[in-house]
Length: 490
Image 1 (tube, helix red, strand yellow):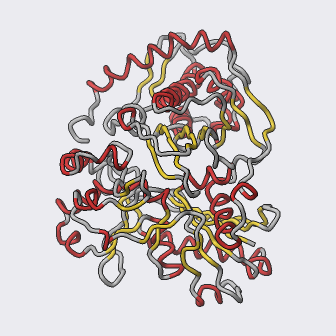
Image 2 (tube, one colour):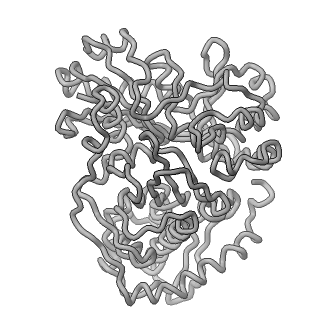
Image 3 (tube, one colour):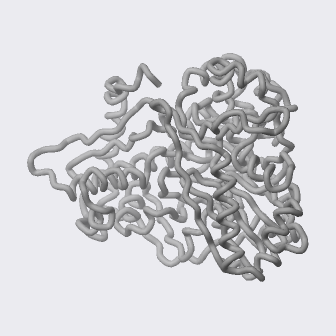
């Protein structure tokens, strides 16, 4: 038996998985974020801990014998967050999250101090990453910065509470801007650019490696006679890839979740920062990945549903299962800024082309298309970085909409495969890593892909029709950029 724990932004999810890789039980405990100022996003790590205990307590209540037999625990988590600890290991301030943009100015400072950062770290400095956050703290909260002795990412802090060990896996470490991603080790130059040294960093390990053991007190709480091994684990997207079996060169998936991801597994480090493509270590040894990210994907439909006063299912029901022509309205999905390809925290979205004949259904379709155009930007960015996708699995909440997947396939011009179990997410991948750490089994034997239940091919006529619409969509970014009311505040 194995437990996977995913520390997401909106909740802690725990799953219990048996030897046949069947999910026996799962629990999710919700979390909320705070925004003390516009563009800020914080959480109290103590809330994560309470939610984790509640989630695993729930697994034990449902499956006490199975939880008692657990051999390994894997962790997955939201990336980039900065948990700052003092010399006694106490949290100094709320965690600054991945979607916090307060450190936009500090990104430029970081790259000035470390001119080789893009080639070493594989990424443009963005406010979501961890390193600029520490420069911001040093500038605006110097008394806190002076007290910092350790910096942990969210899941590494949870490991610290579970085991007493400060250890981080390669994939999550890639999102700090402190890692030499090609060499899979901390970069002294990157750390120096933020006033830190390796002494503040956790030890690094592979996601499949043993990385601590559950404390005896917690093992007793959950009825475990032998405290389980903890795996190195993974950042949330890498854990999702492990859950999907995307662990070999050329494996690819599209995640149509709250935010959006176009992922490609690679067998070597291939940075392309000028395209705002992320190049990270994978959670499995000697593998990397490239990733294009759109910050607002399924969250765009959730926003539109709230504005329109309808639930998402009702809005989608107004559309045909397969659309036959583009909407007459364009939607720019920059509700929270954008990463790939613009790296623009200040840009904001828009509806364009409205007239008196425009209907709610036209606007709903435009939202789906606008997100699909953003995914096409990510796809083209990956191609420029050497990862040309010929097909991909599609996962995430948005993948439940046949219309949306059809639009996405035609805009991206690749077949998309819908999966029988595409919603297991990071917690399931973390459970797989727990098994690998506990048993030493071969990755290829455990990280199998889920069953594909349908393939959605591009519609040739719709693909051609989307060509000029995509060109108009891309032409609108410069105009919106100049009009952004947040440009001076980012």
